[in-house]
Amino acid sequence: MTDRRCKQIFAALSEYLDGELPVKNCRELERHLKDCKPCLAYLENLKTTIQACRDLRVSKIPRPAARVRAALRKAVLER
Image 1: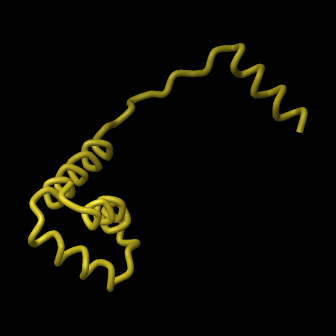
Image 2: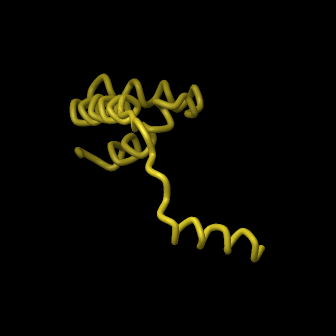
């Protein structure tokens, strides 16, 4: 990270990618990215990580052990 602004950019990138950042902030972030290779590299790395998580498929979730099912049942009934 090159400066305090980069720390702010890093903190806002997830919101930016999720489309949750206000338009004004998006413009500021995009201006910063044009001139900041470390932030741009971090953004690309974040995009790759997000895509890898989306591509990860769990074929079958194993059934919980009997003791786990019993504990869950007990917790629900005690509510």
